[in-house]
Length: 326
Ligand SMILES: NC(=O)c1ccc[n+]([C@@H]2O[C@H](COP(=O)([O-])OP(=O)(O)OC[C@H]3O[C@@H](n4cnc5c(N)ncnc54)[C@H](OP(=O)(O)O)[C@@H]3O)[C@@H](O)[C@H]2O)c1
Image 1 (cartoon, rainbow, N blue to C red):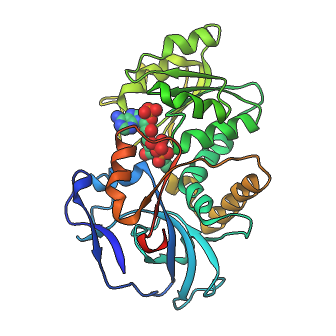
Image 2 (spheres, rainbow, N blue to C red; image 1 turned 135 degrees about the vertical axis):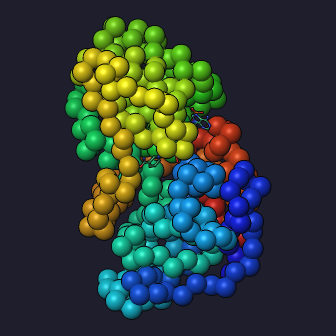
Image 3 (spheres, rainbow, N blue to C red; image 1 turned 180 degrees about the vertical axis):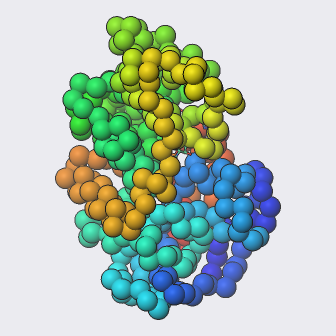
């Protein structure tokens, strides 16, 4: 089978499209044919050494996808060959076949196509957790959403709006404004320098926002603090770009609540994974949640997808399709 692997950390040039033996389903695993693999900003961070450094080289790339069950390993119940499935947080998804831990799999309803299913696993589960659990948005709340035209950003914006909140989005370039507005953002600020707080305060009559969702690194951190209202909530979630260097807790203003939302904690069990994935699928099916596919690349072209997301050129979700299936 064909797969993307990397033998060293670095830029997108380390990604290699190679022939590899197909994996088999070990105990507790399900062998799947990958129809679509999702690209996440996290993949860029992993490629640069942010996580999973205990894995030997060559390492597989990618953590999510959708496809069909080919075989079921020992001890697995609830999955059978031929069934449609999607998964998340399973390394090695940029491949034609993958052995996925059964705990990371969900069934995909007939009304949801593979592209949509793959697109909402990591980013949709993250966005829905942020708006319904990390800070359960209430009607009338005002939220600041960074990278509002990105994968998480477009979904988060829609879920906040669905709950009756208002959204101020921040994007880095004017060509992303339309996408953020189409997702429901009430205002969109174009800023790539971290100079957005004054505009947020102006838009909120000097009060600031109830919640800021910020995965955009050190450049936005201070502005996000400044944009919050008293007792506001700061949901920080951007390990790829990193956080402020030395954070003195006594420097935090306005009695804010600051937390780091981590996928493994907010989707900690397979039961919760399946419940939350089913909720997302139902929102897509009833039209409440629209999934924007910003680009489809051949699996062999994964490096270009990485360049697009890391170069701030992507809008919505980027997907990889095995070359023979395109
Ligand atoms: N903690 C968790 O559990 C968790 C789970 C999923 C995702 N995440 C995080 O959520 C964020 C969004 O992830 P995603 O997969 O949906 O990606 P994405 O938003 O589709 O793409 C990344 C976005 O980050 C923004 N960005 C800001 N500064 C950047 C820089 N210096 N270089 C490149 N991009 C920059 C860009 O938007 P602008 O150009 O408009 O600023 C870019 O579109 C990432 O930080 C990711 O690590 C965290």
